[in-house]
Picture 1: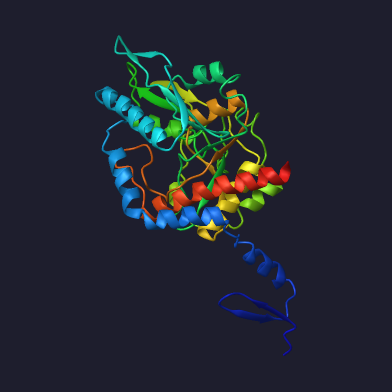
Picture 2 (picture 1 turned 90 degrees about the horizontal axis):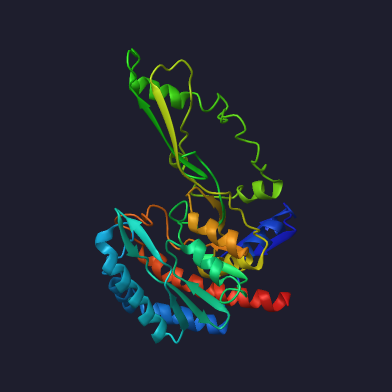
Length: 361
C-alpha cells in the first residue's frame, strides 16, 4: 500500500491515501494560535499568583451582596466600595452614578450606584436595576464611543469544552422569551380534578411533533440558517436531560384557568463574524487549545436585552465556568481551573480584539 499523504503533529505522524485528510489536518492546526509576548507575561503572572487570586476572590464573596434581599442592602453598598478600591489600585478612571430609588413594601430604597470605568477606550460597567433609564442618559456622552460589550454571566453546556454564547433561545416558554404562570382554581359545582385539569392544560400546548399550538406563536420566529446549523455539528457535552418540554392546553375544563405573564423579552441574536466574536474565539483557542462551541442561552437575560436595545452595539456573552456552577443562585461557585484560565481568557480576548481592530482599520 502506498501512502502519498503524510501529516505530522508534535506527537504523531499520520500516513493516509486520503487527500481530504489534509482539510482535517489544517483544521486541527488552526487550534494553535501564537501567544503574544505581552499576553505571555499575563499568563505567567496568573500562574505565579494563584494563591493571591483565590484570596482576592475570597475577600469579595465574604461581602453578602446579593441584591434580591433587603437584608443585604448595606452590603451592596460595601460591594460598590470594594469595587471602587480595586479600580483605584488598578489606576482606572471611573465615576459612580446615582440611578434613583425603588419602592419595596411601601418604602423607598436607594438603588446601588452604577460604576463606569475607563481604561483607554474600554468601559467597565456594574449593572443593576434602573439600567435602562441610566443608559439612555449616558448614551450620548459617556458611552457614545462604545463599539462592543462583553459579559460573562453564563456557563458552558458541559464540563470540558468552552463555549461562546451568541444569542438567546426559548427551549421552553418558562425559560426564554416568555415567562408565565398557569393556575387552575376549583370552580363551584365542578366535578373535575384540579391536578388533572392542570395536566391537561400542559398537554395541549404542543402537538405530537412538538410544535406549539398557540395561534400566531411562530409568526415572528426566524428560521435557522444553514450557516447556523453547521455551528451545531461539532458541539460536544450536550445534555439531553437538560431539555424539557412543558406546557399544553386542553378544552372542556370546568375549573377556572388563569394565565399570568410574569416577564417577556425580545429575541437576542448576534453576528458571530464580528470582531468581538472572532476575538473571543481566537482567545479561547489560545487558552484552551479548543475551538469553542457556539451556543444560544436559554435564560431570560433582561440586562442583555436592555444593553443591545439602547446602545445598539455587538454584545458578547463569554462564559468562564463549567456547567452546574449555580450562577446567580445559592452556592454559586467556580472551579479553580476556570478561575485561573478564565482570567487568562479575558486578557487574551483584549489582545485579540486589539489585533483584529488594527487589521480592520
